[in-house]
Length: 84
Image (cartoon, rainbow, N blue to C red; front, side, top):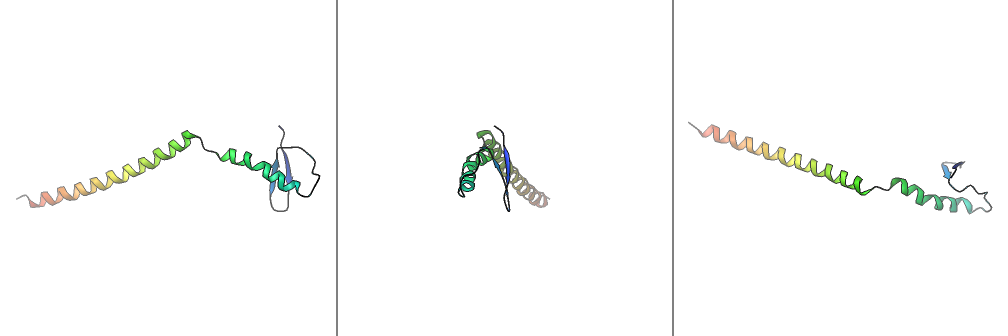
């Protein structure tokens, strides 16, 4: 399919359907017809969701291990000061 660019006052619409406009409502219907294609480009695959979830889990694990090591170091330094 060929795409043709229609310029409006404030925006640019890429129209997949190369058809002449017959009525004043055709621009609105053109925008409505473009929405599924627009959202198809933004649609994320399951692999993308899995990658985002894995990165968030990695961040949570990093913060929790960092806090655990911080507490462990504080606890060990407290025990070391009590040794004679």
